[in-house]
Image (tube, rainbow, N blue to C red; front, side):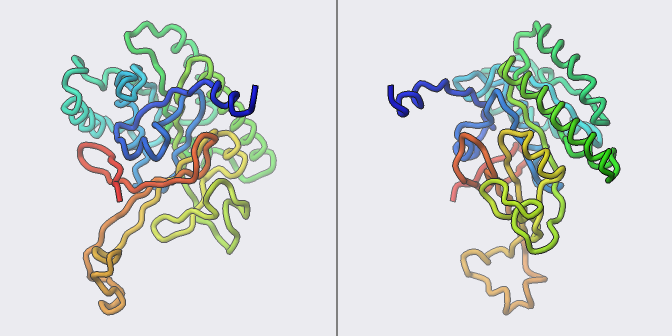
Length: 299
């Protein structure tokens, strides 16, 4: 027995497709089961869009990269974007007309949670729900959108409150990991960002993952909830968005000669980065958001 043989004998982890080959290729096949994947980004980058698309794609058969599964979508702020989900669902049915006889939205179970304590308290109910799921498509995907909203305003900045917050981090993530391994779930949580002040690299002066610092909308940012929460997730993906003058990239427009480009047409470019993941190398890809969904761009 050699180390190489041991690596080949490791069981492969099932993954859930994003419904886009470019995004899947960047992520080694999609979002892995049996673990927690975090999507970090500022507002408007596409976190919720990707989560909705993932919930639809999970219903695809394994031959198409799906899990043949339903989803549990826990939303924590604002109202659930049902209108956008139905818009994506219509495009999804059009792309896979032979697979779905019913509305895919019926396979996405939505629940609202408004505090970290409430999320922890419903964990036994989630476990019971998974155990007693008799539907044709069992739940194999749990989305929490967003985890940051539950913690950022509920706790005061005192040692006692911060200790209680960290304790809840580990309790909630520990239970989610336990459910993920027991039921073969893919767990996805979204997180927000905060501005990174000062000249230190990484998060709070520490480099966490592949990127020394994260940049979005021209600002240096870092994931919310700090280092304690970073140790609670298995993989972290960062979504960035930046505006650039159309034609600046290929040199066809001289921005400096046009008054800094204030009056030139601009476009928003979004990018997905792998910050850290035990199964992925440092990688990234550009993506766009259209009416039909989120799609990677090959360059």
